[in-house]
Image (cartoon, rainbow, N blue to C red):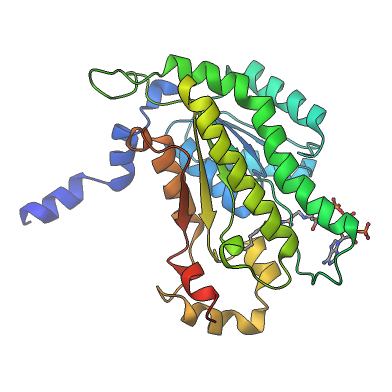
Length: 295
Ligand code: HXC
């Protein structure tokens, strides 16, 4: 084989990530709300594959426990707990789950605030309670997630301070990082999504403030803003099946995103490569939102 073919044989990309980003003995712990959903489960699965243990929480007991078992198959020996009956709108349920996670897995190094609510409705159709429900799940839920996990994120960040000489985090890798899963719809505004647009703008603002307030303690806070991701509840709810082909062709990259695209962005932000990224929004949408206002 040519040198580049030989390199291709020996350097498997997953192994590269494994070696450079999240060393296996680490046993890093990721806590994720909405973890049984399509996007968040892919984010957690990637981290577990690379060496982390995880706790996912959700409202539905059976769905959450089943997904935890499934994610655990990503790596032999992985510990993944699924805790159901957790509603991010109810702080007590969330706090109890966080405490169980810490007790069983030893701490929390990474948080993904992914729980969200959505449906299509015009402002005229939206009841006050419908608007409030989405605000409560997305904004209050993200705040509650932060509030319940921040003591553990701060603790993890203290263990993983960046060495000013090498400008790298400690030998044990990275820790003390939170990602909020947001969207792009509020950049332009979009009919029938007023409730979600307002909520996601709030989520972005929350992350920006966390980045400034907890940055001095070594905690980083960033947003991932997915575009249309194929085979997700979001796309199922928002794009009618008869419109899918047309909508796909309209995308700047000629395709919808995949959950792998979001998982890869997550690995990056939690890796050493993302150490100096704080208070940012990583838009993973193939430039989709840039054309949405003109379509
Ligand atoms: C108008 C609706 C509605 C609809 C519910 N409501 N569905 N109004 N159109 N299609 C109203 C109800 O009538 C009620 O108001 C209020 O919303 C609360 O509804 P409940 O069913 O009682 O609330 P709850 O059980 O808490 O459910 C919350 C929910 C639901 C958001 C309404 O859809 C949900 O649980 N979703 C979670 C899963 C989810 O949405 N995943 C998609 C995430 S995708 P009244 O006045 O009657 O009491 C995503 C992507 C975002 O977030 C980015 C997009 C690009």
